[in-house]
Length: 312
Picture 1: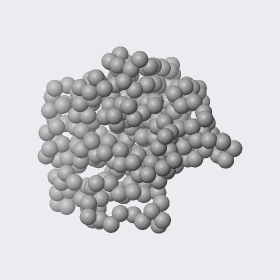
Picture 2 (picture 1 turned 90 degrees about the vertical axis):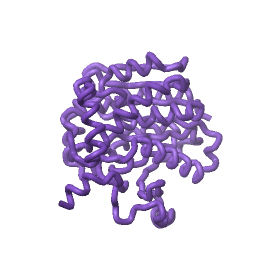
Picture 3 (picture 1 turned 30 degrees about the vertical axis):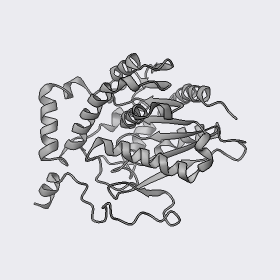
């Protein structure tokens, strides 16, 4: 009965998480902050090594569903060596952050969490106020990044989307499936409906094996509310493309069977930016930043970022 009732509640319903909760002491919990729901969210940072004379820009990473910051070590370290101070948080319900796994009450909680995270980071590093800020989002994080950038396009010197979740499989978005998703979201928001097939994330076998055994990645089914909120967020995004004036790079694998590449093609086509590029990679699956030829992808990403953030 308890499990059934928990499926009916829309809130995260954690014992200690509430807006009136005492926020984490930054000296005792230096890698946590508290969001508007009272959830403690975990984050990581990668500073440029000492031999790099100056920080050239601030780079914020936004991870995909069920992911965590450690999965972006290679990306972050590569960028840090080039002079970027890199920051990434675990989305609510993922990694070291609080919240029900693979769940969100409202998609815009992800967006609000990130904007609060950015505000906190820049307050901790006041010298960065004059530095350019860049954004890189992967998969679901790509959709979050798109909304973040569309909300304030002038705030970003460069935006990179990696295998972004901008369009679902058409079989999952028929009128009936959409009706069912929103009905289940309303009545049984935490009901598990479909798990991500980990075999599809990459053609790089060690990445798949690690993901399957990663104790910080949940393999539980995605929830009904998560699906409905993703559908709503994708619909909303297309209505805001008149604000898509930021410099844009999208990198997407042609073997991606999790996030349709057609969404990336449409986004680039509709974007109003005079500086927009879509790079499609043959024989690469969803996680192009950790694929067999990830270094080639990172060179493309690095070149784009460096062009918009010249070294000082």
